[in-house]
Length: 284
Image 1: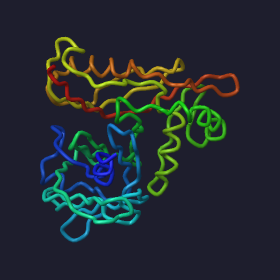
Image 2: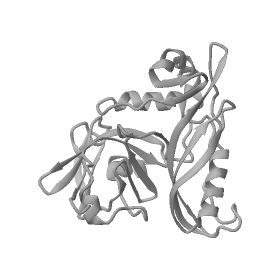
Image 3: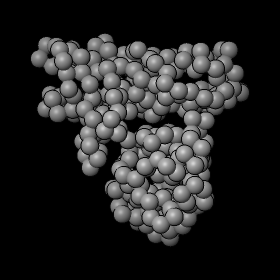
């Protein structure tokens, strides 16, 4: 609990390095202001944050607070070069707030990724021009068993609200800024797995890939059978080469199982999904 107390207020920190990142001058030209969905790994927690440029700083503000840092308070700040990063933490009830050094780097205009203190953070947004919707940022994330029945009961009411379908082929709708809460609900209802990997991975678990960190950005679809298929790597970096990264990513997605989307006797697929995954394989 003490570990979580220290980490939860800081999880919006949007930290470290990605080999896909633009250089500082290019990243400064990106428009990062607006609402983002921050995903915290390995606790599989998501929340909406607002990034704004104020003077010579980027400010990350909590849209919905938690028991440590409330709504409207600064979660993180950094200069326009993404240096001199500070994250705000506090004891429960926003008592004794404090600032901690952090690091952040931008992967792209719609993805910020970072790592620190045993967890990593992915902040994403589905831009208006996006053709695919983010739905995988954590290979361990899955729907809670005790909430699955409630989710399935909500699907019929949300089906047309969340999905645009032609026949039995569907796309996740792309929600405009200001409707991130609806986007989160739709993703939970229609593109989160019921089964995922439940353990850490070390070099004894995988052959011919060695150890070290890698990250991949990819597209995929959820089939009528409730499996993740049609993996296409759009970018990758790290210890693995492209073939290894594709094989390892495919194995991760193969571990996912989804509840098939069935409405009025028809079974549907969702074919416009994308994800970003990071792993660090340790020698044992």
